[in-house]
Every structure is written in C-alpha cells, then in structure tokens.
Image (cartoon, rainbow, N blue to C red):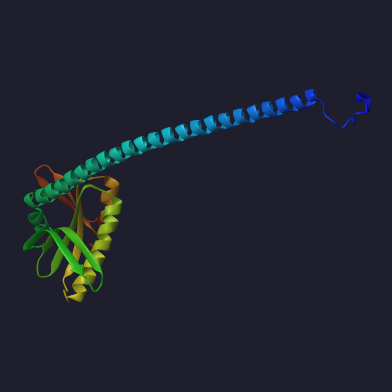
Length: 220
C-alpha cells in the first residue's frame, strides 16, 4: 500500500507531538491556576488571621475600657453613697426633728438606714431616715439630686412598709418626706402635691416645705 493509500484517521508524527505539546501546555496552565488559587487561599488565610488578631486586640482594648469605666462607675457610686450619708447626717444635725416639732410632730426616735423585710410577703426595703413616736412615723428618702421618679419610688416604698407594718399589727400612721442636696421646683411641687413634705438644705440647717393649701398630708 502506498503513502497515498494511508487512512486519513491515522495521525502524523507532527500531529501527535502537537497533541502532547498541547497537553503539556494545558497541564502547565492547570498547575499555574492551582498555584494561583493556593496563593489566593494562603493570602485569605493571612488576612483572616490578621483580622482575628486585630479583632482580639480590639476586644482586649474594649474589655480594658469597660473595666476602667466600671471601676470609675463603682467609685462614683461609692462617692454618691457617701454623699447621701452626709446629706442624711446633715439633715439630722440641721435640726430636722426640731423642725418637725414646729409642725406639731413630736418624734422621740431617729434612725438612719432602717431596713425592713417580710419574707412571707416578699417585701423588703430601706428607709434613709426614720423618725417615730407612738402615733406617727415619718419615712424620709434622701437623694443627692431628687427626681420625680425618686418621689414615685418612695410612694411604693411607703406602700410596702405599710404592708409590713400591718402584718406585725403596727397601727401607727405613716407620713412621708423626701429630701435632697438639689431639689428642682417641678420635683418639689410634684412631691408636695402628692402629700409629702420636702426637706432641703439651707446653709447649716434644713428647711421643710409642707403641702400647699387644699392638699392634705398623705397618711399611709
């Protein structure tokens, strides 16, 4: 059979070598892609690791700041507690018992930070200043800066104390007062309209404001 009779399906040497060359080139491209993907993956890993470190560093800084602020807040709370204690002491030394005597209340005992509790009723609380006698007891709440919410909370405190007193058959009448180093007019008016006395500092003594005409002192 002559060369002219060779079947067209038979590949020539050049074609075979060209095919091998293409396969080699494709493999090289594939390996190059693999290397590039590997590099991309490693770069992403490095970026993720960097982000993780930065996130941890940021978290550590934020946590350190939270701890710093917490300590500062604790200090302020402690200072506030001291300030309230000083206000209570100032009110006592300023003649609060004598001042209420002028309002026809003769209190024979004066207690500070008086706690009360009734486990059966699940009630507890604390009175900043507690003035009492056989007929009346005056429950005073003192704040550095008195607010309307403080007045509302004191009303709830009086209600709780009344329940505790009824449970132990204490039939005395309870009246309320609020006091503060700073008492704004709207807060003072709110307390007075709700039947409470308002105690404010006036130099070395204290001043007691009574509910206005037409408003009775509230009895619990």
